[in-house]
Image (cartoon, rainbow, N blue to C red; front, side):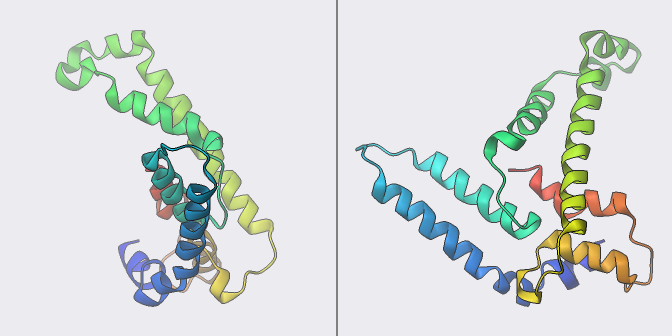
Length: 169
């Protein structure tokens, strides 16, 4: 996966091909600032939206509304902030189960998997993309179809690679 990422997904040519996406989203942010009627603008929120939109378009092919993934992201933050007794005192791990920590982690993993599966199906069902319009999911699916890497790229590997980036924003 490391060699696929370096050679196909994050090569200099591929990164440069997404310059238009970065420019388009920056122009949208500047227009939002210009059209704001307020004297105070929340730049943190605007920059967060800019980052979200650029990553979405590059990795997934289109922007996703913040509320579409907000529940998943909030769940990740909540789980990361939770104290797990079992991590520090393994024989008391049953307490985490009673607190529902394991259930919440399983539900969150399923929600995230369903979202990523939907993205993959959306890409499989769309018409062929032009070379310059391919996003990271298109490239991974193409590599999986062509089997050009010398090893079988499985669907779960596609879910874990650049789509994992999506979980970070």
